[in-house]
Length: 487
Image (cartoon, rainbow, N blue to C red; front, side, top):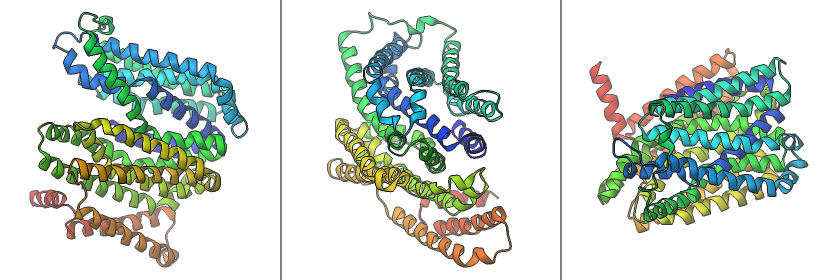
């Protein structure tokens, strides 16, 4: 619920507040700063968040947690200190990368360590709450709270109540407030016992520490997979400047909506798949993999299609939409990359849960190197579309190689006829939309919004009925029949 509420608030803020009160360059500034902080903080974690989830059952005895939370503070602190040293040593070369095309970023570069620290421990405290089975409030802080704090900063600046310098401080401070709220909540659910952060040295024997460090370092590399989109804005800021990065930011937010269901559906499916892998029930793993992949593709493609057929209407209603309409190509390419990632991410989960999980490392390195190479190659000639294309190609290469490996070594095939049917349906519907734009839209006596509603209802209904009639998913058909039977 927090994810969807956050998306709704974020949609309003990004499209009706940010585009009205901030310039393209200012939008690009905030995006590059946040993405840089997210990238650095995810690396500074040293895989702590994943290791907490994995090892918490080994530390908790129902009464005490034997220092697992202390570990969660210590290891990221070491990572942050190393990042701070890196920042101090290489500050001048880093600034030189952005000084020519993004001079505004260099004015606020000194805030990056602070923003990294806030992002780092906001995430750490959230995971600590989640292993205690109390995730709702922490999720609300991340998905809703930060957006509302940012909204306050946008409005104060938009109405001329604060200067640009104060605005940037308030914007960064939003993440500090979120960090403190998550800390307060964690202490509250533990009875305000600061002792939960005390390392239990008697419990932390050498072998256990080695195992946790080994796993944490492994997950440090694996976390790069989730940060591939961050490379785009960092490359764009350096190569094209903050204004185009701002256009890219607005367009990418539209595309990000495609993968919102993936977060929820994936969280539900992963424990079930992990249990089947643990029991060596590979027939069940195959069945679950195909089911999850099919339904992820079905939902993500439907959302992408509904966004795409309304893309012109969307850019026509947002404030200063003409300044951002150049991001339409980004929505197409990034949206497709989200579909690819959502549809086949279960293959990554299956590999990670198997005894061959260590092979995830070369695949993540392949994804990372591909993203860097494609960004470096394509942004120059293609601009913001090049960054989006780089993401699509990187995920395409990664998933193709991964599917081949999982199929050959683990004998798991997540592809199905239903996915092919879904691709055919969307391809035909895209052609129908093209015909609508050319021949139907010009003769409709409707303004932009009513025309978009009519098209969405008609074409969306065709899509749903076709999916049902062609039996793309037996599960979906059974759910529909049961719902109709109840009525």
